[in-house]
Length: 189
Image 1 (cartoon, rainbow, N blue to C red):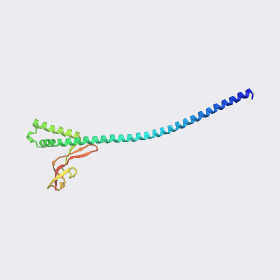
Image 2: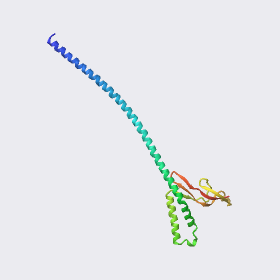
Image 3: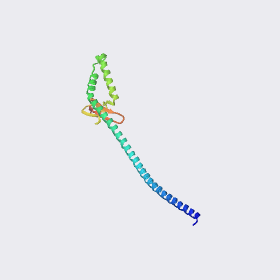
Image 4: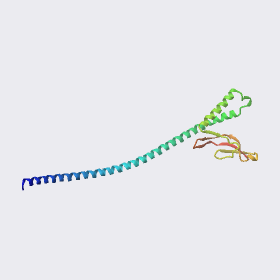
């Protein structure tokens, strides 16, 4: 073999070696690509699961917060009602005093102050969503009225409330109506 042929043979050998190295490198890149593709698929699955878990946790958290707020609101209302029940006898006694003031004392400044005090207390009570509802001339409703007795009355007012012995109070907000105490009434017959 001539020198030129040897040189070509060496170049061919060298090119084959480079080709072999390139094929080996391509195989390594394919393996790395497969590994990265598998990792990418795993990360996509993890991402999808994480998003799903996040959505579920967010929903659960929002529901929990909503429930806690409602429970807190309910507890506030219950506490307010219990406080009002403790205060109610005082209001009733003050009303009894104000409603039985003799006419000769109506100009007395102390009496006027007492009436003003009662009116202000009622305004504050109403501002806290507590109301007294007038029962006279209404038909008795077992939710709001406790009929203690009947009394003979005109036919026009038969089975209507003719006298209120004890007022009834309700707590009434936008979405709640709770009877604090039913009215004790006399019904016409």
